[in-house]
Image 1: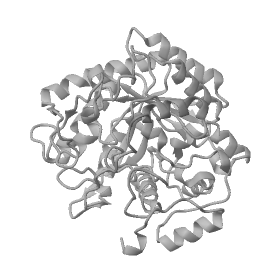
Image 2: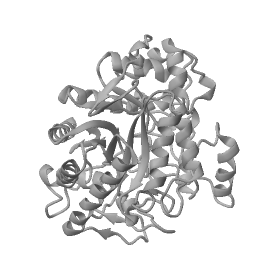
Image 3: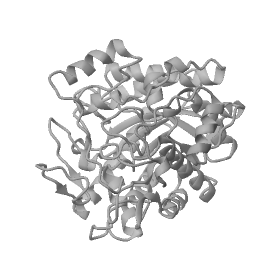
Image 4: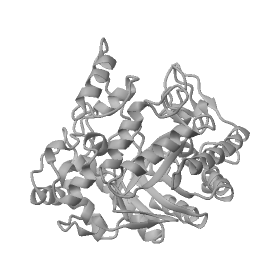
Length: 450
């Protein structure tokens, strides 16, 4: 990338499609734009089911489960709003497969004891839905970001000079300990099927356990070093779930980490900012052969380089490149996936930063066959009925996510997450309580490779 793409802070200020196209051309990225939106209304077949349209709600964690891991009133409220919003697919947030793998004390966890509450949540989504939704439940182990009680308790693939924090004790999981987690994924998948979900997502993104293992070139044993070894844990889980449960399998996958060798997955050895699409596409071909029907491509690590997977307008540091560059890489991940594995249902990520102009960008990707579905995360927090508004032609730019990052700040402060700006009655008090007596959000240390 040349210096022309460096920026002080590339805020989104494009008033119309023509202005967006002009900045796309000026920045030198390749992002298709289309002002015909009819194809977004099309249904999409996924495994044994279908999405009623091409718009999707991504798994946005609220950190608001009850003590037993069941959905709270805030959780139920969130998914009621998402269901009423008209998206064809609703991807329900991170649900831990074991207590030690929870990212926070209020993360969802599905057990035999609280199964009825998840059945009620799935039924509520169906009852409240503006269109019949395809429902995915994300299964996770948080790995190095585990915090099941009141302090971090990292369980990692290995030590990292880029991600380890001073003063924390890191538990490096042995191969046998990883093996013992596979039945937990199967158990959770069985319960998800009983709860009424169409699919389970074996989460493999954003630096959590499976994601970290994918980049573990430094690790010895059956789960590190070679491509075959680094992908073994994810593939073994997929095999075990496929053999035991009659449910569709999805994977939310990092296409690239933007971490240097020997740590980064999907990156070039000489420059970790440049994706190695071969790693991603080779894994996707294996996943499809094993029965995975849906994949959502994302990138980076929100704890380390959040601009990579969610371009923003304000945050703890200034991204080194224009946000369009990172959006382009996210979109190209979907494009390369679709080209390599055309039979796989591919969902693209990275639209929220575009505000109301996400509509022509989404339509452009669909028209060019870069993806089958388009996913919205922060936008769903800010504007839960975005899909209905988009498809009806009444999309209101004044309701759009402004990429301020406060929904993430709440999580970092230990609170329940939501949109501070547009859902202020509930989340502004939570945000203020979390910020009370604390200094401004500290700048992240960005290594020179970024």
